[in-house]
Image 1 (cartoon, rainbow, N blue to C red):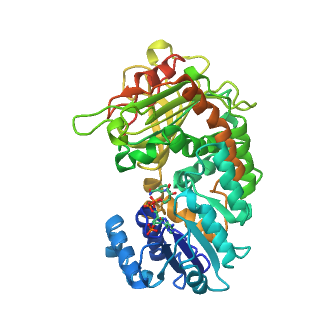
Image 2 (image 1 turned 90 degrees about the vertical axis):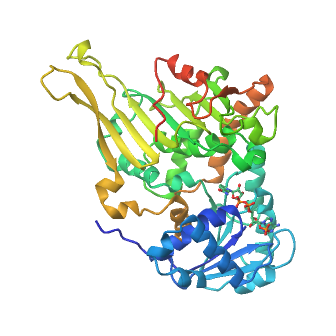
Image 3 (image 1 turned 180 degrees about the vertical axis):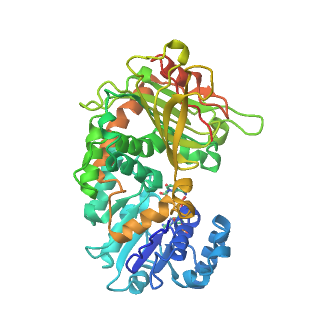
Length: 484
Ligand code: NAP
């Protein structure tokens, strides 16, 4: 199967925070991969901007090192590193001062798509937006890309939206949630809306429950100070898990168009029920033999911030009333995995009798590792042992089904940056979506703060606190095993 790479238009991309961690690990190696794939045109220009004193040559060295560190195999298979580096430049720029801005403006070209990536803390968004405008660098068709966290509650998200809106229209603002750039997430939409098979079953009449798990094996590491002010609810649930929930639960949009898709997602968020306190479980990882506890890493011995979160919610509409949705995410878990599981109901009556066994169909959408979609189907166990039923997977792992090109699917950041250049906002969050997500999240956080709830300790390398298992067991259900 031959993959079709369609080059994007020529562009000028300015990366504010071009020397930061995100630029080094994701944005720049990702752009190099798109250059190797022939999608980024050779006359495109990427300008790094930060306060560090560097010139173009110094920045090229910096980017070369980043690519070798974070995607070291690529330069061995793609001989275009020198050509890619030639597209790069750098302007020493202070987001809060005046240094660098006239130089930056002078280096932008007319007649190219123009994009500004705000790979800096949200405290600088307003300063950068205002200066882009003042220096005449942001024509009506230019775009800005902003990173998470987009606020820490409804109030701050509103303020950020208002700040950006002073200088940019909504159709110029690309709020990144890199989960939406994952191949499987888009495949989820293809599976749902490109097949007749699933849609008739996609409702509370046939679906028992939905569970979404995003488990990480790493702890908070060097980000402890930042994370301690945030926690799993703000860092993961409000954005990533919420976006996955939306794509699973939304109605079919009339067309695959940015606003049609985002209108449907917004309706899901607005239909989410408030979460009862006894449907919320928060946890903190304990020390293991090799590593310290969450509180050690956060350097806060009395921290009440959660590194694990599980909750049960409902989407109150005709399609989903009565189908609970369970969300779970945590750090220092037993395996790194992200999975959405749609668990169908039992057959209404078993003609094979109790000894044959009963298995529920589960549609599992794995985001990592081994991106792919699996449908569990019940068949007869082979052999002469009578009618015993067994659950076997119908596996749609892309690498197997689509051949070697499928292994080369662009990573989320690459795809999303190319979408910015193409001017396609479908996989980016709209301002009202973000605000609606905070409007649902805020009372949950305010509730546990008012109650003074303390997260439960859980063992590093486990599936989270015991109470999270009970959240499901009480309903006669269980979490899917967390496995790599
Ligand atoms: P970082 O490593 O601290 O980098 C910050 C960048 O901003 C540096 O290039 C820094 O360079 C520049 N900067 C700081 N103050 C500046 C100023 N006044 N004027 C111009 N440039 C300035 O942060 P990061 O991890 O790359 O994160 C960037 C953004 O992405 C944050 O909003 C973060 O929450 C978000 N994010 C990061 C990740 C990740 O994996 N790292 C993932 C998701 C979201 P100078 O100090 O030289 O100016």
